[in-house]
Image 1 (cartoon, rainbow, N blue to C red):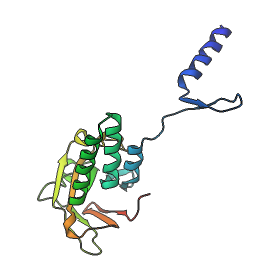
Image 2 (image 1 turned 180 degrees about the horizontal axis):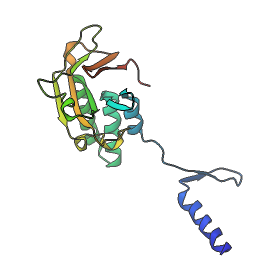
Image 3 (image 1 turned 60 degrees about the horizontal axis):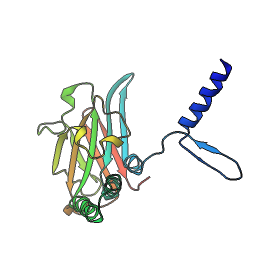
Image 4 (image 1 turned 135 degrees about the vertical axis):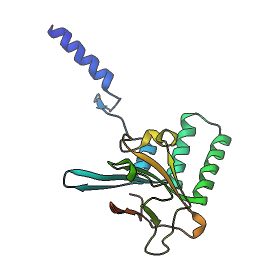
Length: 200
C-alpha cells in the first residue's frame, strides 16, 4: 500500500508539473496556468463599479475599453494560434486599426436586481452615458445590446458573465476624443465613473 502511494505521488508530480528547468542537476517545477497576453490586455482595460444598499446589491458594472492595444493583442494571438499567413495577419491588423481609428468603443456588462433597470439601449432609458464630461461631454453614437458569445474577447473576461446584460457603447473618434478617457454612466440608482488615464 505504501509503495502504491509513492507511485501515485510520483505520477501526480510528473502530470501536474507544467515545465522543468535548471542546471547542475537541479530541477524546478512550475505549477498553474500562466496568463495569456489577451487575458492581461483585457484585465488592464477593465474597470469595475459596485453599488450596495446595506446588504442589497443595487448594481454591478464592469467596463472594458476596447482600444487599439487590446484589438492588436487579440489579433496577434488569434493569427498566431491559427498559424495564419503574413498576408492574413496584416489584413486582420489593418481591420482592427481601422475600427479603432473610427470610434472609441466600450464593452459594458451590467447587473441590476430588477430587469427594468437594465435598459441602457432603450431610447426612453433613465440612464445617461457620457464620455469626458469635464470637457466636451460627448454622447455615444450607439448603445447596442449584445450577447457575450459574440465578443471576440469572450473567453478572456475577468468577471462572471452570469446574470449580466452586455452592451457595446460607441463614440465617434472624429469628435476629437483622445486620452485620458472618463466614462460616466448615471441614473437615479447611482453614478459610476471610469477613468483610463493610463493603462495599468
